[in-house]
Image (cartoon, rainbow, N blue to C red):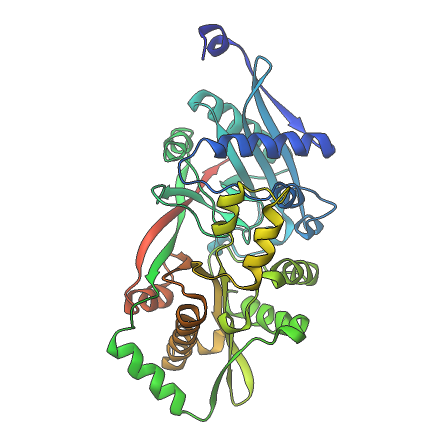
Length: 390
């Protein structure tokens, strides 16, 4: 970087419309391309997430995208957004009245980082917000948090990947950590400890319990079951915002190609669905080879992989047990039974050797205990920061 370039004025501009969104996404891709272990994602998917006409998140949210320029050169980006449903949540659960969000944070240096955060904060103030929380890109259900530990290996499907120095820049701007999220790495090739095996076998003898695969031929119905459990199970969690019917339909359509019945479970007690566990094969395995492009030949590899993702790592992004069963032995038993079935299928039918569970909130004692019991280990840590807007 030349001295004249370094001394050029920094200007942060709001962008919108098709061309503005494309510049915003492409700038983020350019930053990501510099990172070791980063896996390029599909550009079309990234464009859709920031398009109010495509992403149903915007049915209850509004946003402003910003790009920072030094001279004529784009040198950073950020989003500022407000989720109306998040404003209705109890303050003790992380959001609540007055809480605005920032996300999609990338910057060349600390000076640009300050300028971007200041622009996002001013937009939030103008919209009546009194607190800034982030990075969350864009919904809490998409990519929450900044990667602060785990840059030494590639992210799995739907996981953010950021340089370590971003944390220092955000903290230097007056932000404090509000929440920490973990992912846990699991060696799928190993058997679970004897304690887990005993718990699983006990559950298998209980005639009231039925752990079944999802049925893809009635996928829409299964999605409704899963999301109804999720909205109940997670309703007291930090950062919870309920899924809307439009988001349920959108997520179901997006996820269906990744669904293999053997890897996704619903647990029933007395015939009633009470718990679920979703597992996605790591599509980043293919995207890394195609460099995030479907054409000219990437789509062939993608179709073959979707049919049989052999050797792929597996990620468990979501699981839940109805709230009425929280803190009971049955809840833990159902979780271990679903994990055991999925591990067995991933290993025997797909040749998987590695899995990831997460995100898991650091204060989610039940899930942390389950992760510890199956001898998984924390391999990635994400931070969400907050700052009062005074």
